[in-house]
Length: 274
Image (cartoon, rainbow, N blue to C red; front, side, top):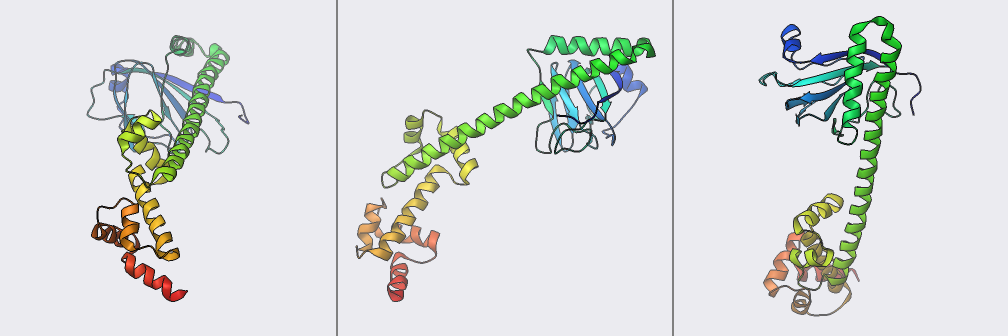
């Protein structure tokens, strides 16, 4: 997965005393990656153009070239370790970068939490004791990186599965709407058919198609109206009634809203072309 061996740079123990000795506004480093693990306390942490609430168990990925830091107005009661590394190469990403632009840079650890904290403890303790422990520090820093990469991989797999599930759901909803668009369909009805809340369903459907389920139904009705106006001699009133419109004026106004002409004008236009 990576081309060259990663290099451990240093580790910081960040507490109130550290902040007092090393006052620092939101900042960035162009040549290193920082992995910040929250041990105690919590609050807001700024990464790039977002603020995230962090708490014990959270690890913040601060990629090279990315602005990050605690918000200036926040109290300094958060205690964390910061593992600094360089020479990190991930395919399709800039050097010393673990996440792409749209990914959330905050991870939460539960199962591996104790092991991860033990590694941070040991890494910091050995690093400050003696340069003789440098090789051990290199191994421990890489172990932290490996745990983070595994968690990112798991998160990506979950996201891929979610996208697959959403695509299948949207396909099923679309097929149902195509089969029943002439009926009086409501979100409550779809909720019962697909066993998902109407709010979640509407969000997923619109995210995938750009349309709400109800707007999708309306466009299907207008499409069917176009077909009938062009290819049949059925009275316009009958077409509107078949498609579920209350009256002819409602049908005419809705058709014009989407197509730009009234049903009568639309039919005349295509009759002239035949």
